[in-house]
Image 1: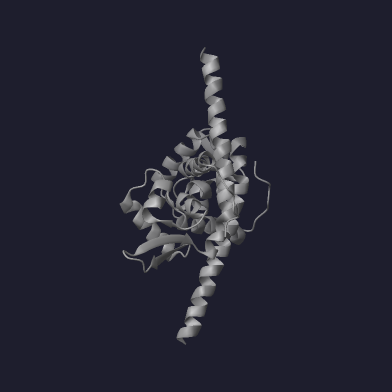
Image 2: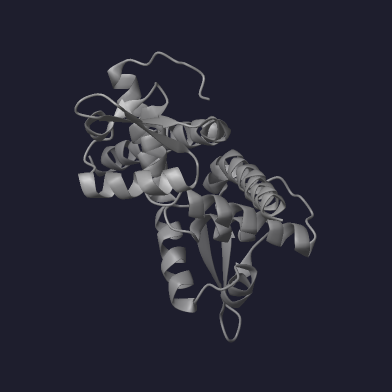
Length: 126
Length: 126
């Protein structure tokens, strides 16, 4: 279980606040997948929509606006004809790298856990 | 920014799926704060409600049920009179430790970042 740390009441409420802050900024199921999709380089709206499966244009556009506001994503308009718009990660989004890696490895192990449990259940029922 | 990793298409969609899995299980702003509150030891419903500020009994009860289903939290009924009910973390919840620590440290640095930006803005306006 968790390492026992004796926290003072202020420290404890600070940790809790930090976690709430992080969850608020990264809320919803799309923001981190969008950031992950952009981690290989800039993408246009349609490309991004394909990279993040099953997202509707309306939601993608809303999420991109929030990601821009929080300075994780930049929108660049190129003066081609017709204009092209690209989305790319800001340097600040790099602060999320370790967090994303942690979510990824936890998600993988959780899937394996659920999978091995359901196999065990089937073996018992057989 | 992110370390350049050349991922194959399958690897990339696996990472994306892992992140979506993790976000789905931990969705909402309460689950991780509840787990953090229980990390010091078992608590009763009312104590837990106090530890996680501003949560309503209805939401706490709903979140606890989901946490039980996903095997992060155990509910123990003690045969006192009247009966007392305690909630405590399962060993499996320990797999979340690094992820919670990462969210915490990212949340702290994000707050400092926002704070230093607003100070800079005020200095420019003054």
